[in-house]
Image: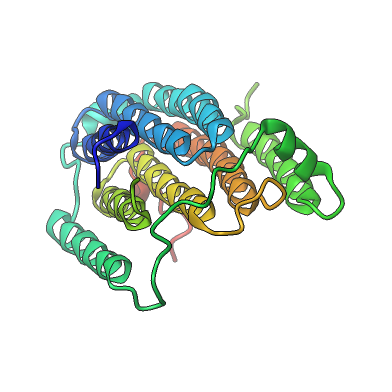
Length: 170
Length: 105
């Protein structure tokens, strides 16, 4: 594997993603955990750029870092009983063993080609523009059904969230 | 060129970090953060498989569409989950899932 821009970028984003993820699950302060979550999500956005999906990277930054992480920050601030929890972790050792075992099983499945060999090279460069995605989302033989389903789901979830979180007295 | 299995290994590691967070945390918000990590790991897998498959043409956007769908589900899940957490906190002054046991028989 030669050292070029893609490889260096891959390692940088790996450090961002996995380091941020470890920060999320190990930090005791939930505010810092939210910041680590943003770091990790930014690393994932970098992977999307490397995998020639720039639109997904932009959506990742907008939706995840811009909306979901801020939403989690609000939830942390609105539920200030965080300081009251003395025991922040439960069943730490069994959880660690379970997740490590899962990782080893997954790694075995990834590195040992049981289901045939992997393509070692990327598919030839695809010129994928956002326009193509927009056309595919509304085209008859494209992705109309998932598009409409996602729209209905998102609307229902937003109405449900407002309804659940509404204060009964007001 | 980075081979496919490295993307898959990173995604597996991120998924297992998320599993650890979900299993070991007591705070409901922290559990939701673990779930977000797991969803992101799945997204990396979907895009990587799409990029490395030989059918990655502009007209076949399976990986793209799948990932966008997962992103939308994650947004909906975060909104509803945090609304539930805030309501439980308002009623019980607690964000620990074990203490929300009103429906327990």
